[in-house]
Image 1 (cartoon, rainbow, N blue to C red):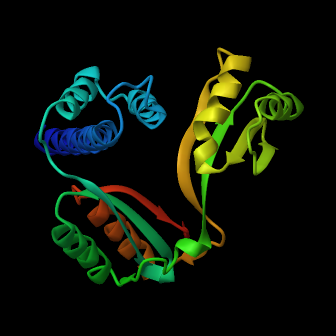
Image 2 (cartoon, rainbow, N blue to C red):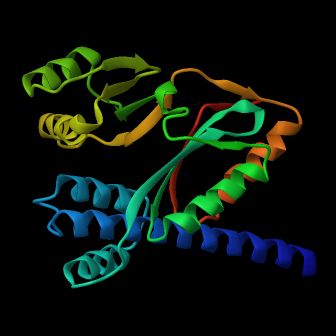
Length: 239
């Protein structure tokens, strides 16, 4: 029983640690969004989108409520957004988005993740110009023509609309995310989104092969272990 039990215990610990990281990430992001805007989701569309995303990722209601209650109170931490860019293993391009209350600490931690994994952190804008910042909604059900008509009637600025293996994928500017989602859900109330996010999509891809594969995996794990890191975007294709 010994080894099997130890393996199971290790897997459970990893799962618990991952959940804690996810809960912490959403709690901090919801707090900042509510603190900088309004703690009322009906009056803060960004907050509403964030809460919906958190619930989809199975974040418990008490975590969300605690973050909202904290935002309604006086004082609290003074978090702000920080973005770092650079090159990782295999010369892939990487964007790291953080929420921090200590920029010096966060920069040092992220920089070490790059340095220890054959990477190099760059200046602001070093790689961001090679990514498209966009909102993406993906779902099945209606046809491409029906979706385009619904979005046009709602005056949504769509940058791309395509169908892949029966799934409709809508791309729009980040500012159009909620407008596009609202137009679609008002037209089809039971619509289930496979993807609903604002992201950075790489214009070109970089193949990561050989010894760089293990290095890249360690690099991603190191960034994931940084408490201040919220999102990581890259153009790596692991072979």
